[in-house]
Structure formats: structure tokens, C-alpha cells
Image (tube, rainbow, N blue to C red; front, top):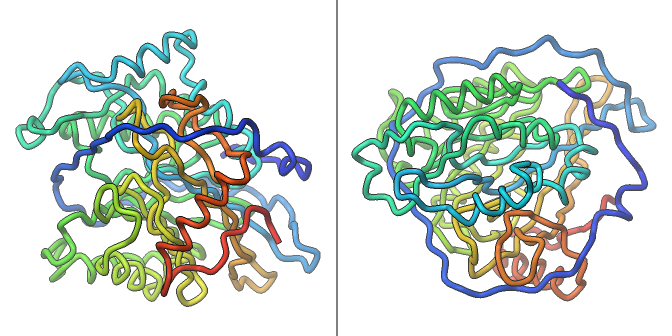
Length: 382
């Protein structure tokens, strides 16, 4: 595990070039995967010695960064995605061009978690239930360095594209992540990340059309999620749960999402992260825990001109007292565009500097969160 340094001067460098919105239709697709149950825990490395404390009262502070959909590559079945390949070629096949404006942000936290929606594989095999999909995501495993090179330590894999190339592509992806020391989570694999003497456990679930279906010996997914989280929380002090849920292109969560998010927190989740709609959704504070219903797109190769290219990155801090009590010390958002140029998506997410555009993102979150969302979306730490 690569320890991250904390640079106090960084906040002044966060925001770079103002950008403007582009408009054109976008479309996204989803498919069905097999249900998962927790059957294995990813190898947990030896915890490193505590790296000291940040708080003056002797407590440990851990900073966590989360993003929405991280999708890179092409579709070697439908022969789509040429524009991403061209962009990659224009950068000398250095995949790190995608993270050039985010790398320092990720370097300065303790854990960065993204939703990796795609596969690291070279196989052209496509299962029958995926052949009707309009887009299948994959990228050669040689480009997996984009994660460790840019301080992304963990990914959630429970989404509707992880099985685009069947079991072969899925196993290729997990093997590639293991080889690059990237922790991953599904509903069957608990990702474990030790930092400053504390182990963070991560779970992730695909919820689309599965809420009320029997799964893993339980009557429905709600019951399974509650049991999984409770069992995980009994072993690890911090539990982060990712959900792939909701309706595509929606700016607000459904009642099913709200129910599942509350169940997760009640069962012991310390943070809930959501994605799938490709649009930003409000944040709710429920029983002292944050539920991010959707972080939208982050680095997304599935559309070169999506209608809405605004998004945000979520950061929070956990405070662990000397007696072991864990509390949340608040959050901040970093408004971004998923591109660094004006008129198209060049797959390079970039912080926004234009105050009016930042206000537009914040107002969107507030307006769509009336009645349940947080009242403020701070841009800096208190």
C-alpha cells in the first residue's frame, strides 16, 4: 500500500481552467449478471504501522475520495470506441492522460475509490445475453497502470458492464487488479484496505431490477445487503458500500434507492456511494452517515459528447479517537467536468473554476434534494 502525503497548499491549486457545457444526446446501456453472495475475502495485507495522527487531540484522521463511473477503452465486439483509441494514440499511448488533472487530488488523500465499469481483457468473447447490448466495454490489461500511477487504490466492480465479456473477461479483470495491487469489491468479495492502522472494508452491489428478488439464500436483496454489512461491520471498523442503482439519466434517486441506502446505514455502513444514472444526484445525511446517491460520470469513454458533462468528486474524513470510536467530520465536493476541452469529451476529468458553473452544480444538487438532501455542499474543509 502506497502511503499518501498531505500537502496543505494543495487547495489553492485545485481548480484550473473554466469550461463550458456541450450538448448532444447520450445513451447508456445495462445488462443482467449472475447474482453474487459473499464467499471469499480478498487477501488482506499486513497492516502498516500507524502513520501518526492529524488531529491535535491524538485521534487519527482518514481522508477518502470517491468518484462515479470510470470507464475507459473501446468495444471490440461492435468495433466502437475509436475516438478513445485516437485520443490515447494522440498521447503516445500513455493512458495517464486521463488522470492528468486529478492525480494530485488522489495523491493527497488516504484512499481513492472509483466505480470501474468495464473490463481489463483482450478477449472478444461475448455471452449471448450481452450480444444485444449497444456497447460493451473493455481495455487491454496493459493499461491498468492508470490506477496505481494515479493513486487510485480501490474499485467497485458490481455494475452492469463487468460481465460484458463473460466469466473470462471478469476473471481477467480481477487478475489484472490483483497484479496491480488494486483492491476490488463485489457482493462476494470484500475489499480490504489498511491505512494508518485502520482497515477499511468495501462491498458493492448491483441493484438494478434485483431489489425484491431472492438472492444468496435471502428473500430479497434488501435482506442480503443488511446481513452482509452487519457481518462485515462486526469485523472491520469502517465499512464503505457502493451501489449500482437507479435509472439512467435521472437526477434524483428512486424510493427503492432511498430504502436500500437507509438499510445499509442501519446495518452498519459508514458511507454509501452510488452510481449508474450518469447524472449527479443529491447527498443525504442519514443517522450521521452520508449517502451519495449518484456521483455521475467521472472518466467515461462511452460517449464522446454526452449532453451533461458536469459531475463532482466526493471527499469525506473519518476521525478515529484513541479509544477507537469512529466519527465523520464532514465532507466536501470538487465540481468537475468529465473533459478538459469545451466542445467534446476528451476523457480527461478536470476541476471547474468558473463560479457560475460551480453554483449551477450545487443548485442542481440542492433543488433535486429538497426534503431529504443535505442543505449545503461545501467546497473546502471546515
